[in-house]
Length: 99
Image 1 (cartoon, one colour):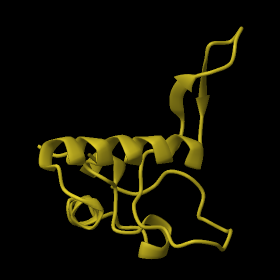
Image 2 (spheres, helix red, strand yellow; image 1 turned 90 degrees about the vertical axis):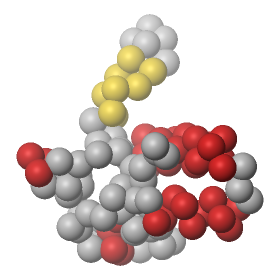
Image 3 (tube, rainbow, N blue to C red; image 1 turned 30 degrees about the vertical axis):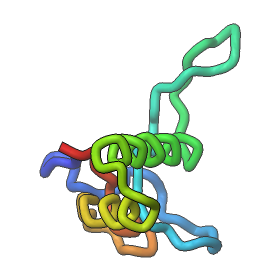
């Protein structure tokens, strides 16, 4: 969860591309991840890092509640940590795992 120390704001550049609506945010900057051999690990940024994080949290909500898609979506958006950045950039906020 963001803290006062990090300001609760995304650390990447502002979004410039137009396209689909952003609904939820996930950590996607400087994420330590597996990589192709021989390197094995790398630190990378982008949607390819944030998307699996949000999908994993959605799976945790499903495991906890067993809810269908609409109810699950409601939990994801309601439980998100609101960020100070504008909604077009971060949607409902930073997705949070169930407690």
